Image (cartoon, rainbow, N blue to C red; front, side, top):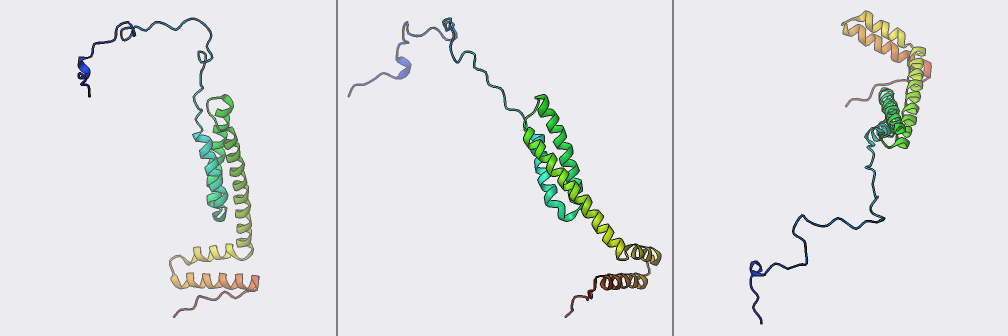
Length: 168
């Protein structure tokens, strides 16, 4: 087997490569890759935030307040994201619009739900209950009586008997 000298003892190649940093410019002419330019991706953070808040707002319809709060933020973030996308300074216009739509649906659902619940509360003696609790102050016996009267009224209005949970 032949023996080879260590790499640092090889002579440098002659005439094949120009000295480091002295490469000649490319020859003139049009090359397909010469004018290639890629636009950096546009940031879509606000649009994604609006969409996620809109989805959460619709899910939060079961809590009414959550739907209203998250819906307001979804609409605000969606409008900001849509304006930026229209100006060309951000991306995600479709996600922004979806966030706005979902936020508005949650807002409308939350407001309608609040109106229905408040109407039910008013129709079944809710204001009387609140007045009774306010007048009772810190008297626990009177507070218990207010609760029993309210439960009796709701039970009579709805035709159901509200019974306490059995205790063992």
